[in-house]
Image (cartoon, rainbow, N blue to C red; front, side, top):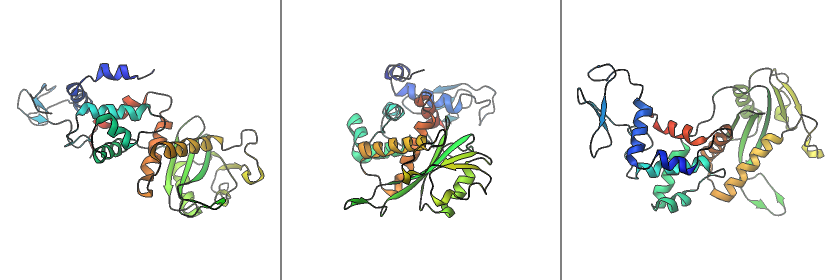
Length: 284
């Protein structure tokens, strides 16, 4: 199933349709009015206001409250359109692109893009089956002829073959940082493939089945033992950051990493319906 721009325009032609969708998503299964207690309450749209009112007691519900749209002067359909762009753009959407699409200031565009990324959360379950683990280095400068790791940021990732991926911006690639994350994210007894970094040398003692490839000797695969899946994700992430965002500060690197993890995890289904449903949920 594909969610095209024609599908989007047909379902969300104006601000009213967007507001009605948010109300149905957040309150469509309401059993009783929270004020008068009437069963299966009937709410109608208040004219010239972004709220709905109970026809029996006058209780008003504001679907935008405590969402990313709260107190925003940007038209609701413009928000929906940018969320759609994020859902179909494999390489991300920069704030400058949002600025050009909506005709808003860069400050407004940056905030919208940041808020949309906050809808993209990583999976909470533990990975099973065959899992590849690796770390990569992002940013920094290339000094002289050799690339050094000075000033680079470290991202640690774990991917379940044919399944989900998890990745996190970490302060270092040491065992004290990576192993607790690995234990938390990968089920006991899982088969793990990695490179020959020393941090993975204790995986068998921790209850995992482990094998590795020796990249320093030019070995990148030995039958089913390889890390090509996670390496492919790193390539997509780095190309997108370089080509779309150009420069990402360490402070916000995790949100960009999570953005691409989200796209990978929903790669086999339309992203927009999932993303816009998340936008309708109220922030607690």
